[in-house]
Length: 155
Image 1 (tube, rainbow, N blue to C red):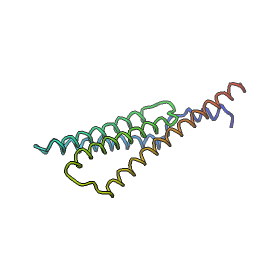
Image 2 (cartoon, one colour; image 1 turned 90 degrees about the vertical axis):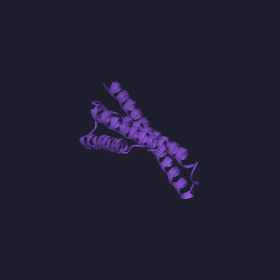
Image 3 (tube, one colour; image 1 turned 30 degrees about the vertical axis):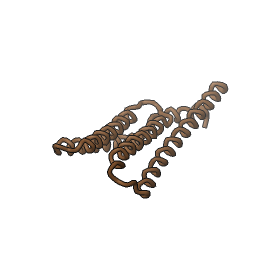
Image 4 (tube, rainbow, N blue to C red; image 1 turned 180 degrees about the vertical axis):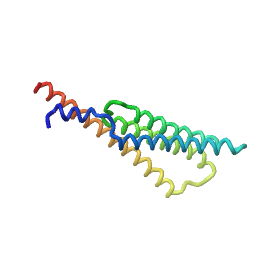
């Protein structure tokens, strides 16, 4: 395979399978936000802590819906940029949810070691996903640049 052929494959837009996957992400985020909003709207007199938690969950769902829509509408190759954005979204959602849950629960309840282990494990998974996405993107960009250099030297 010539460098030009490899570059053409690297510049291809998202596959149908990935587009369907991102469409599912968008619909899941939108559905989750809509259901939480509906519950929030039909329960009058919720405590402020619960309203704040619902607001955060709605915002997280909407972020995933926007991300899915953004990824589906791209007409050019993303070079794993979609994975990096998803990694940052995952890390941000974990951080906001963890801080919010700590603010809501710690004044009233004792911290359980098993719960702390789960929260820290989820945070570690979010960090590792972001790290892997950034590495994959950097590798693809290096490969593209190397191939583009080879194509200009050969052409």
